Image 1: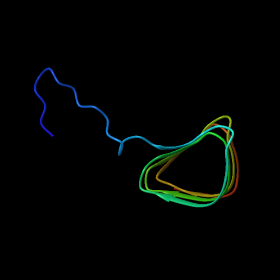
Image 2: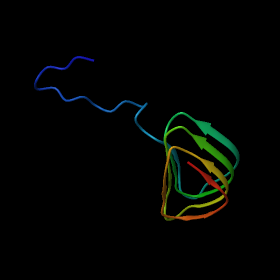
Image 3: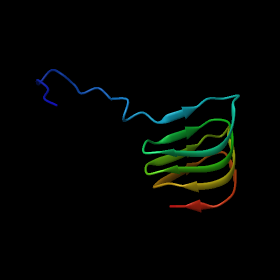
Length: 81
């Protein structure tokens, strides 16, 4: 991309994490090449080649395979970085 001196690049959807909103429950296998932000309950396996962010309001039961982990919530499972 080319920008003039006054233009600033904007983020693209590729930069934004996948967002699992509050008050939702998901069970299964989630695989993504994007970062993932978990704000509620998840049971299963999450695989991302980017960052996994488990927010304070979230509980994850299962395995996390990621490049980087930010754990502010609770987790019962294995972490593979």
